[in-house]
Structure formats: C-alpha cells, structure tokens
Image (cartoon, one colour):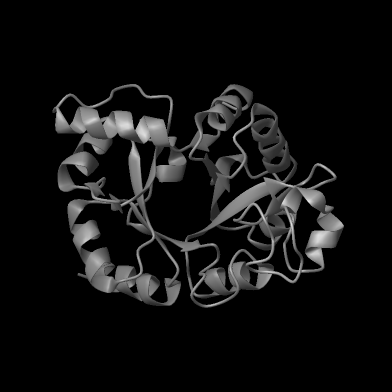
Length: 245
C-alpha cells in the first residue's frame, strides 16, 4: 500500500524552496508565498547550526543568499535567523496545514535522528517526507521513525532505474517513493515505464524541478504524482485546469 504522503486523488504541487523564482529561496517569506498561491506542499533543504538545531538552507556556505560568509554550521540558529535562514520548526509552524519535503543536506546518522526529533516536536511526522542524496542519513531516519515517509537516496534511485531498464522492477523497497529529476545529465530518469513500475511497487513519483508548463503536461500524462516547482503560480492553475476535464 502506498504511503499516505505519496497518496492524493490528483497530482500535487510542491513549492521548491518555497517557490524560488518568486521569493528569496528557503525563507519564511517564500514558504508563505508558496502556500498562499495554493501549493499543496513545500520543499526545503536542511542543515545543522552551531548550536545543534535544524535550519533551512541549501548550500553548505552562506554567501550566495545572505550577507554572512562561511559555513552554516559556524553560526547559531539565532544568528542565522537574522539573515532570514529559518529554523525548521518555525517553517513547520508557519506551514502547519501542508505537506513538507525535507531534503537532508548532511549525510550523517546523527543528523537524521535530529531531523526526526524536530519533526516529532512539531507533530509533523504524518505530513513530512525526508529525502537526501546520501543513504546514511536516510537509513537512520527509517530506523528512528518507521512511520515517516522517506524518498529514495541516489544509489537507490540508480538501482530502481537499472532494474526498470531490465524490466525487473524493485519490490518491497525501504523507501516510500521517489523525488527525482526528469533527467540527470544525459540519463533519462523519469519515463512512462519508470512511473508505471513505481506505481506497481506501491511507490509515488514526485519530479523536480518542473517550471515549464509543456514539461509539466508531459510528466502528468506519464502519471507522475507531484510537480516540485519554482513556479507554483504556473503549476497550481495548470493542475486545477486539468482537474476540471
């Protein structure tokens, strides 16, 4: 049976980093804007602060999006909040009625457990999904909270893709679904066959980062379950219009 996070009567829209084309990425302002535009959920990236809290930021360092320099881990959560790098718990409080994709950017078991603890304190286990490129953090999340949805790590996606090519798809996997790009370099990841194989295994397929309506329509025709987008202002109306047909 498919995990509830990946289950919906219609395709979902997630605001990628809050809707990074419309507001400064991974900020409270962006998440508020994404939800205001009607996104079903938000996607965000998390790291640890110097004082051991989970904060929302994509890069390892701060200079691309803030006036601070150096690694996120060199600053406390309070210092980071002054440059609009919010704590995960504050985002969960702001966006309490939508689904949340939490992309873990640190591949350590201890960080996975810290993310789970933060989600528990916010009563967000049932509306969150933790993803990561690395498998160590995801193994820790799955062991710490089996009820929490997780997406496939990069090596798990590779395994599923190879087996789909061989027409020997995965069954009974450790992950709840996929949050993947349509392509990775020259390799096509998402295809009609891959989506069908995932669905037969009870897995959802959510695709990033979909900003072009033509790409969105093609992916929806293949049966994907969600679009993760910088442009919720485009994708929410597109999904709503298709639902009227």
